Amino acid sequence: MPRRAVIDIGSNSVKLLVAEVVEGEVRPLIESSEQTRLGRGFYSTRRLSATAVSLTAAAVGRFVREARVAGAEGIRVLATSAVRDAHNPESLTDAVQRLAGLPVEVITGDQEADWAFQGVISDRRLAKASLLILDVGGGSTEFSLGCGPTQTFRESFPLGSVRLLDRLAPGDPPTPAELEACREVVRDFLAEQVAPVIAAALQIGGAGRPQLVGTGGTASILGAMEQGLAAFDRDRIEAARLARRWVEHWVAELWGRSLAQRQQLPGLPANRADVILFGAAIYEAVMRQFDCPTLRVSTRGLRFGALLDESAGAWGQADLTSPRASWAGAAAGSSAEARARQEVLAVMNRFESEPAHARHVAALAGELFGALQPLHGLGGRERLWLEAAAYLHDIGWTVARDGRQHHKHSARLILEQRWEHLEARPVDLIAQVARYHRKSLPVLRHKRFAALTAADRSLVRTLAALLRIADGLDRSHRQRVRSVGATLTTGAVVLHLSATGAIAQEIAGALKKADLAQKVFRRPVRVELA
Image (cartoon, rainbow, N blue to C red; front, top):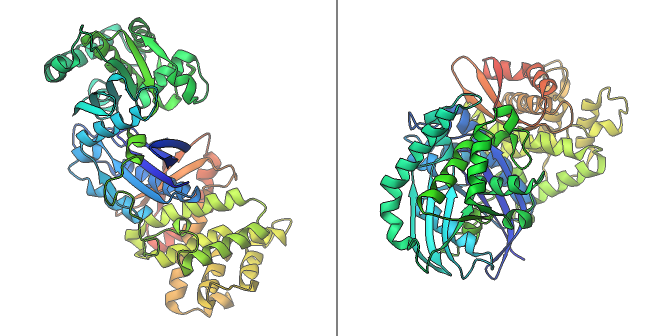
């Protein structure tokens, strides 16, 4: 069955959906989310910050690789409110193109509302109902009206949870006065900008009153909280029917707790415990403004609708053999590079006892390569060699059971393989990059390194510098650093880490192994945790 993937860059988080699409039905296979807060601090300047761009592009790159490993035949990267409103959208679109090799589609608010509608009605239980669909995001909220496949109204409004958080910035815990101030802001916005536009279509109080359906993160969280869920469960969340009094209850409950207390609530992800205040307040205000007795929750919104889009060229493939294509993204059998990749992975699987660590280091190395491309100026071929070295850097452990000299054994094993799809020069370079992932740096007293041309010695230094940092970022072998981005200043390379759990060990490992990078790039390396 055909598989497709959509990566949705929002103001609060980046989300991935990989699914099979069969006869108008979306069958989810992978759903992932990573909070990067692209919209934090944005609404006062309308400029995307370098840190948020770096983290967001790194998350997109990771999701692209995940989608391709899952067999997605087409991948679309979409960006919504923050990017379409930014004065510098190219800072993100260029970073994603460089890191992931795919273009970013910056969609309009109307398109966002349309796909949210199409996604919700892909649920057969809602396919023929009269609906008012509300998609509350970080930077915007989309309203859609329709019955069955006929959409009668759609519009996007500049009202969102991250936008309100930046504007109102309540204390911890929030005060009753701050809750009332938020309610007043949202109530006035709805009365002045939303109600006049859709009041007639809503037919409030008439026989055609639509059901209110919420889609997006806030609605799913409210449904999960109502059900007390510890983990995502689509069937149970979509079974939620929240009476208006219960939405009002949850608003009062959330605003009455400190951030730490909210983070303990079942169904509420800890990293959403700040923005949920405003998302819930928007739903409360809409239900009051339009006299909606019940909120029904749908987990099928924008990404489901985008997957169902069959417009011309929507699912055109990226050129996987281009210089910007990643090693992990090459389609099996599509090129000589793809065959070489399969051969490298086969060698890794034969020797590597911890393939999860090797794959994770390769992913982090690829992200570093893309983020630091303005410094090193290398292309897709060199990136492939770096990722190959990352896949194979620890295979020497099969010989050196105590770990001693395993980096040298890794290089030897790489050189000794009978490679059918890699020529002698790339094999030599891959082996040397793997050899220098630990301990001593490449120097001319090492005979094999000295035998390289000056250009290849420079290349090995650069790629080994990136591999050393990537390996340090998984020092615990627990894959706690989910992604890495970087910003460049005249005085430093600043690495931005997105992580789960304590990563003091990983930060120490990266800084220790940044010694070669500091020599190659002629500036210190610093680490910041998002």
